[in-house]
Structures are given as structure tokens and as C-alpha cells.
Length: 320
Image 1 (cartoon, rainbow, N blue to C red):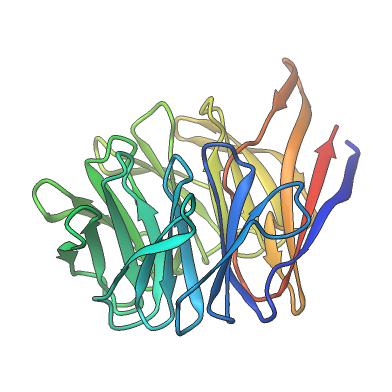
Image 2 (cartoon, rainbow, N blue to C red):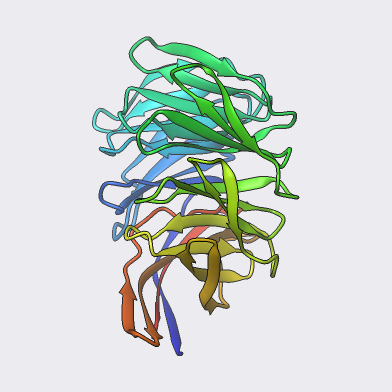
């Protein structure tokens, strides 16, 4: 198997460290970056300069999220403040407060009228955009929240924390539905299977675990290997899971109870931030020769990882 990678584009994203990145899920051509310079910069792949720079935060920007139409973007700061921006009007719609510490995670509800935020203050908050305020606070994590995701049907919100616990919250009942405590490191990433009632979680313990959301049971796990898991995303057909780890990209074949590595790409992670540079890897096309013939996987999703740098490098990687 040969691999080929080349630089698509390089962005001088911020004057200081880049803390977070979010890609729009409608076109997959628009993305935003947040930095220590208190700014949110919005970019389009193929454009040499930022489309706009959103100023208004008074502290570093630590989390970002696009709504599905890519017309609104949320930005959370190190002091816990959240700002909602209208990209068409290039203006801030409102500022929201309520968290007492770093806002580490943001996610729009699938229907777009609500969003959730997680913080190092251990609280998960759900906000109504129309009412301009928090409508519910979920308490239960013993350490800060690191990642959040809504279920595709919008009924539940799932949070992962630095306490190594995954919690599932029922939005209608406003209470904890279930929790998973099998990881031995903090939860970094969550994704839902596109066709089955299945949850995947990635952790600093170097494993990805698979959970049945009907029985709330652990039904599969990868072996701990390499370094910590940074990002995961299911392929739209549900047959494979892509895992961005510290030591490269891994592609897992998902079958009930069995998780098997099809491919290990021993390269950079999907998005990495080294001391002065950020490498933004897009796996454009992967061709894998299997026993049953060739399979081509097109990755058009939002695998992300954030640490600290100021330059974004966009790359295309093709493996045959």
C-alpha cells in the first residue's frame, strides 16, 4: 500500500496560538478557527485569506461550532462566555454568560433552535437561541466536560468528561438517563453511528469503545495501542469508523461485537497543532484493496483535533 500526501494550502491563522477549529457540515468547505488573540477567523478552503474576523471576546477563544446551514457560529471563551455570530451579517447576535470557567465544548441541536455547552466548571448547559438564555443546567460530572454531542434525533445529549465518564442526558425529562464508566482516561471524542442506535467514544486511554444505546451495554472495544485517541467519525454508510490518534489515522471496520483494523496510516493526525504550525489533514480519497475487492471511502466529515499553534496547513492524502 502506497501513500501520498501533499500540501493543499497553508493559513497563517492567528497572530498567537490556535486553540480550536470547527468545520461546517453543509459544504465542508468552510471552517473557523479560534485563538489566544481573542478572535474567531472564518476561512474557505481555496481562499488565501480569511473571509472575516470576528472580534468581541476579551479572552482566548477555546471552542467553536457551526449550525447546519453554516450561517451561525458559536464561540466559547476561556472565561466561560459564549458569543453567537451571524456570518451573513458579520455581526454578533448576542453574548451569553453562565459558565464559571473555560467553555470547552459547543454543539448545535440538530433542529437548530437550541445548543449545548460544556465547561471545566463540570456543568452542561442547554440554551434556547430564541429565548436568549440557558433553559437547563445538567450537573453530575465530577471534573470538567471535554466533549458533547446531540443524538441525531435530538432527544438526548451526550457528554464526556475529564472524570473518564460518558453521560447520557434526556432532554425531555431533563435528567440523567445513563452513564458509562469503562474508560480509564478522559473522554476526548464522541460520534453516533449513522444507521444504528450505536455510540462510539474515544479516550485518552488509547481505546475506542462501542455502546448499544438500546441496552446501554458495551459491545466492542479496540485494543489500547499507540497514543491517545483524538477524534472519531463514522463513514456515512456506517461500515467503517475513522480514528484520528496521536500516531496517525486508523480505519476500523465495524461489525457487531467485532472491531478490526483495516488500515493504519502511520502519519500525522487529522488536525494537529505543533509548536508553531497546525497541520490540517483532509483524507480526500482512500482506496483499500480487500479480499472482496476494492472499496473507496470518501471522507467528507469533521474529524478535528486541537492543541496549540498558529499556522494551518491543509493537506490532501491519498492512499492506494
